[in-house]
Length: 576
Image: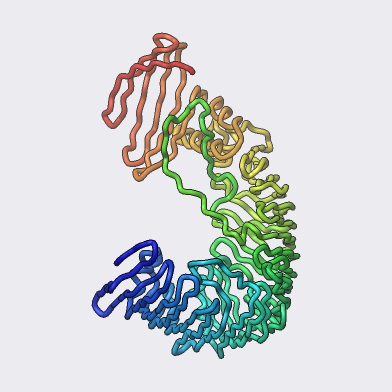
């Protein structure tokens, strides 16, 4: 092979593997004439898909390509055939393309043929400048003619076009459309009909069946004359048009009506909707408006607000030269980023939050808005109408509650929820306030009790003063677990005061061995601190320690445990 400023040339380059062959010969002139050929025979596609990061494609490809003419006026021809073509486990069948190029005109004749799915054909001529030498020519205003047609094409093959967004697709498509005009001002004529359609999107999980659609193209618009889809026991119907604007993205004007339409079916949520949706804007920046009524919904959240919390970082600790690997945040798809949204959601009845520890009916109204290149804003109030919620192992009956969204981005709703638990001696009220980022929990009782006693009544059915030793340790653990998830410092203080402690710490089980620790401590003299700890997990045991302060900065500690460990430690403390 010879590479120079004038040309790339070879007398012959051949690659072979079993029946696969790739042969390249001739001269491609960077200046001056060209005469080269490329022949590919039965090349397996699967290894190249693996290199591209997608292991699920297959088939073979054969190609005969020729280059002639000059760099300023090249002539190209290529014939491609792919057999047993498959993408993402979708069998596409045989693909054949025959293309020719010369004098700034490209012609193409091709078809995709599947023994069961049918055949899709395309023929056309389009202006394009493929010269790699000399001045470029603008062909965007020159005429083009392209025809696409098929008769009862099985849309199962279409899943290969969007395998990460479409789980299932089916139906029969009849289409005969001719595009004329120019690239800057295309005009379409023809029609398309979809029958017996079925679609399951990854995002929604629901099956949309009995899909029927009719489209008619005429001039600078494609009209959706009818669309019908069944979801559950309801339906979606739509009409509209797509405008083919000169030199601009296609404009949208689509309208949909939903009637008890089962729109979403995912493990975490199901929803049936009624109402109206309008899609405007352009195909590059759609604008969605809607007024929807939630007819039925079930939400199964993985967690309820503030069931766990994380400690705030210590501002006195600075990490020096820390290079923790972190994954980059996924890039927002451009269509989502440019999307405009203005949707009102009304919840009147039969909408529930359901988990093993909760069953709550919801109502209310939300306005969901988003401008292009901005985040989603939610404004409105969700009312908690009735139900129950398990808190600390006890079933609380919902008294009243609201969750208010104020339009913050990202959403940070405000809670105002009250629930009640009764036993023969006490009536306990739990109030959840604050926001989702900083929830606040308040405990109250009738007759009135201290916070530690109220928590003890919830967990054990009796005040803290009546607890045994093991129950006291459990109370300490639950108090710290609550304090880590909610803003309620008075609870930890109340538990410490009730039990006469100076320190109270809980290390929740972590790691493969699920090791955890509950420790309490108290000063028995001004400079003598005694601690007792219960360790649980793979190495359960008890530990006791005595620490004596020699000076305000230096102390010595002796400790021993039931596992046979003993130690003497010297500590030097310095505040900074």
